[in-house]
Length: 620
Image (tube, rainbow, N blue to C red; front, side, top):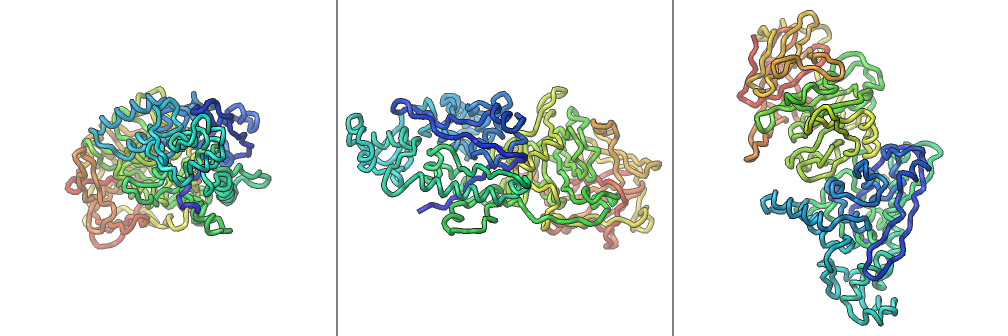
């Protein structure tokens, strides 16, 4: 009986088709490990597609293992069959599969890295360490010590479901002279030699039949996927193959890869947005393969208004229906100026650990940007601020508190490294780049082209998603709102947020000629490296928010969903006291004056400073 287990689907890119060469290399002497030598190289890609850029290849035609390789391998390794340690660390959930597939990795390097990692964790193993350490016992890791074998186990792994010593010896009588009726040594031969050649280990399990069923389901899921359908007329059928190694089918059947679909507690991680329950689909004999489409695929929302939901300014229909970016940018003095920050229609600034703040730029008009960043890591509360805009989140990793939210089925994120701490995936990591004009960590960037390729690769929609997008956020004034009719209006031609954000010292000065507040940081104009312009805002909101310190490292938590806090709203050189509320993840944050009326923002861009409750702005 086929066991149920979630199949981790390959990545979804674009363009044309190619035929993947496959097969198995013959075994050498007993115990040698050589398999899957037919690997798709850059030379083959050039011949078939006319390009060596993996970002333009359609992974519907690659195996899952090769998808992982071409996404994470460093540029100088592309085309090689060797899997580097850095690549394995970037996608450790698939490490077992990579090793089972026969690609080489230094046992000593991996062992030393695990020991060093555990030491840095003060001797407390986490899920990342456990998976890496367990791989040291993988029977296909070249150079590993001799395996410990019993009649049914190989290095602690139970093969009794697929192996019977008497059956195996009867099928291979040539072993009578070299191995004899020795169940442990027969199991050693089966694991180290038989599995790679697709040999049957018992009468109950036929790996060829099992592989055929898996491949059929993989093909149907690829044919049903939105990225494949988007290739248009004339497209060839995808390769529809789970792997070119029998070892991967055995490993899958025996649940060798459950670490990739489980949390530390051993429960199914439903937040993973690329799971496909292919076994269930096969067992149920389902004709409808819609369940195989990644969870990130959602119905498209059509925005017919030609007024921007972000600024109330005129927009084209295409622009109105494009999902925005939510880009994590630093306030570090050494990181200024940022590239693309003046394109942000909404700019958030919130405190982080270490007494420093960070920014999240909501950028609807991003498709023409060749350099966006630099990019920094995310925190949980930014995700809740971002969700109400249904964006594609761009960040360079994050913290463990994001787990379960950043990898939820509703979230679409592109990350330069692990999504949260040392855990999660690194979706789209291959499309980030570093510049030479600054030193790390202030030199990580991405381009609009890279984002578009990553979205195709991950199956993310760049169009607004029904059920997530909200067509009404701010309540814009039909004409200019000078706050003259608002209760408690005060003069505010300068706004000083140094008590709210002591490190960045963010401040604003009102430019009456333009009718906007000019933004300053670290005592001087905050500009965009793309165009040299000082960023400016028609509306400035300071949102007082409940907060707490989560741990000894100083990580913070903010109550982004609340209904009982206050703040200030500034526009046209004036300011008023306000209250705010947000009722759910995708619900817009609403702001009200002291008479209980929802405030009317002026047309233009908006800055939102999320202040720790008790810290207030100074103005005039």
